[in-house]
Amino acid sequence: MGKCEGGKKVCWVKWTTVCQPRSKGGLGVRNIKVVNLSLSRWRCLQPDQALWKEVLRCKYGNRIYHLLNPNEHFWRSFASRWWLDVVSLEEAVGLNWFNREVMRKVGSEANTRFWLDLWVGNAPLCLAFPRLFSISSQKEAMVGDVWVVNEVGGAWSFLWRRNLFVWKGGLLENLYVELEGWVRTEREDAWWWKLEEEREILG
Amino acid sequence: MLGGGSWKKKGKFLVSSSYELFVGLMMPLEILSESKEMVFGSVWKSPVPSKVVIFSWQLLLDRIPTKVNLARRSILPDGASDNCVFCDHEGESSSHLFLHCNLSFYVWSMISRWLKINFITPQSLFQHFECWSGEIGKGSLRKGYWLVWHTVLWVIWKARNDRIFF
Image 1 (cartoon, chains in turn green, brown):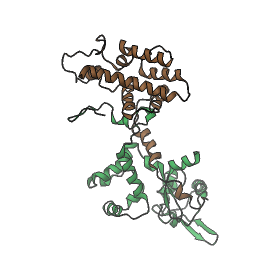
Image 2 (image 1 turned 180 degrees about the vertical axis):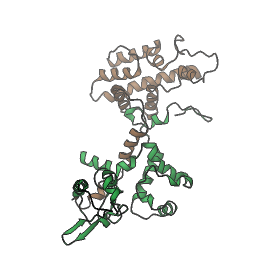
Image 3 (image 1 turned 30 degrees about the vertical axis):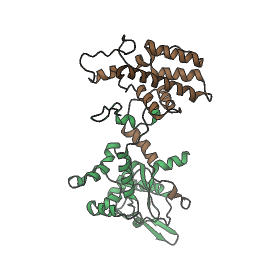
Image 4 (image 1 turned 90 degrees about the vertical axis):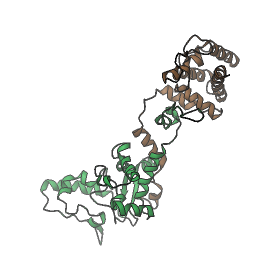
C-alpha cells in the first residue's frame, strides 16, 4: 500500500496481510495468482475438449486429465513456466491439497482407474489395499474393466497373479464392503469437489 | 443412489470454497486475539468514505507514516527529530499521536462530552475502539458513533499533516 506520487512507493502493509479476510486484519483481496492456477487445474479435469487442453495433452500426455502425483515431475526439464506453476501449486499450498479435495464420481466407469484414482472411500484403492494391489493383474484397469455386466446387473471380476491366501480373503471381504456403496449409473464419470459437498451437507 | 442431476449441482468447484482453504494453508499469519478480530470486523461497518476506513485500518496495523515509523525505516532525514508536531514532547508513535498527546486527548474528551460517553483513554487504539463500541451499546446509533470515531482519527491526521506540510 504505497502512497507517494511517482517513484518507488513504500509498502506499508504486506501482501499476505492484505489477502486476509477483513476480520483477520486484511482487506479481503484475493491472491489472484493462486485462484487462477487452481481454476486452470480444475478446468483441466473437466470433460470438455478445449483447444488449450489439447495443446497441453500433446505436450504432457494424458496425465493432465488425472490427479497429478506431486512426486512425479518428469516434465521439469521441458515444461512451460505456466504449467510448472500449475503443478507446483500442489507444493505451494500444502502437499497434495488438490488430490485431497477432489475425487472421482464414477458413473458409466469408462475412464476412471479402479486402483489408482480416488473414487470410493478416502484414498485410492491401491493405497487402501496395498497387498491386494500388489498381486492384482489389473493395475491400470478402468473401473469398467473390473465390473462385468451380467443378467442380474453386474459383479466385480478380479484377476490376481496367483491364488489368494486365506488371510488375503479377509482383505477381499473388506474391499467388497468398500465397494458396496457404489452404484453403476449411465452418467459420465466426473470430478467432484469435496469441499462443496461438505458445505452442502452442513448448509 | 444419488438422485438424478444432483452431480451437476453439487461437487462444483467454487473459488470461494477453495480460497478459504488456500488462505488457511498458504498464508498462515500471526493468530489474532478474538477482540482484535472483533475490531477488524467492525471498523468496516460504518458509512465513511473508503479512504477513511482504509486509513483507520492501516492505523490499527500501525502501518501509517508517523515519524516513529518513518525513522524505523530510515526515511527521516539524519538528525531530524521524531517528536510529535503538536506537543514536541514525545516520539510521534501512532498511539501517542491519536490518543495520548495533549491535543488529541483534548479532542477526544470534547467529543466524548458531546456524545455523553465516558471512558478512560486506554493504551491502544484497539482497546479504544472496543471501549467506544462498549459505551454505545448495540442500537441503531452504532454506525453513527463509529463514523465519529473514524472521523476524529482522520481529522487528527489531517491536522498533523497540515502542520508539517503547510
